[in-house]
Image 1 (tube, rainbow, N blue to C red):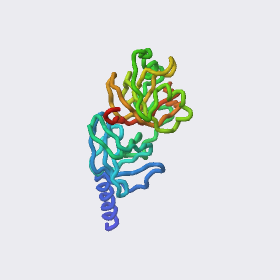
Image 2 (cartoon, rainbow, N blue to C red):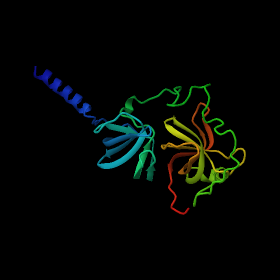
Image 3 (cartoon, one colour):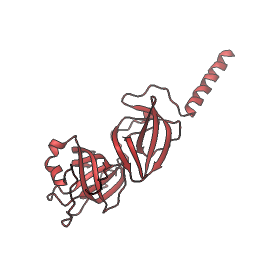
Image 4 (cartoon, rainbow, N blue to C red):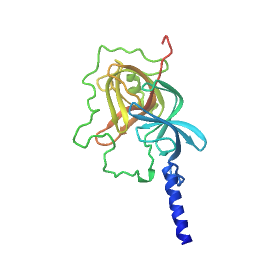
Length: 246
């Protein structure tokens, strides 16, 4: 009888523990764990202030249902400093963009043949293909100081690969929530018939016609599967505000 009561108490304790959102199971290899202190949704994304082993860290992720005291995990992340969120009109001294934030990393496996979130099935077309019908020949964007034109990025892509770059351009196409990201294509009036359009992934939202300065890491020869191939792309870009007079 005593043994049965102890088992019941143990089971109730475990249930209460997980109901509170706290999780003391070993962290899966490659993942970071945090407990939600504060959270809010904006622009299709969830912003969370996490307690990570005593440190308070802001992260942003594809929108998920979380509340205070929930435990979340992520493994694919990129840190950005002095980030300004257009949708929240808020500045973050430091924030981490997490591509795979989840409350259950143990059940997060995907089959190899499963299409990533937001990607159309094979044969349904690639929304990035022929993003802009033609080069906007009347477009002339003044380059950002300490930055590159789109033409320069294509010409110097091998030496710039893996490095942060800045570029200013006009938004000619915007697609949201593909592969868990927002996708922007920009032009600045430079480049030839094959290198005038530059794709950018970001957490921010824009309208066609917006003139934006981006900073992000340049990647080359990226293949996301299902026809998503790019010779050049800027990933996880932030918006850079230019000082007055520039």
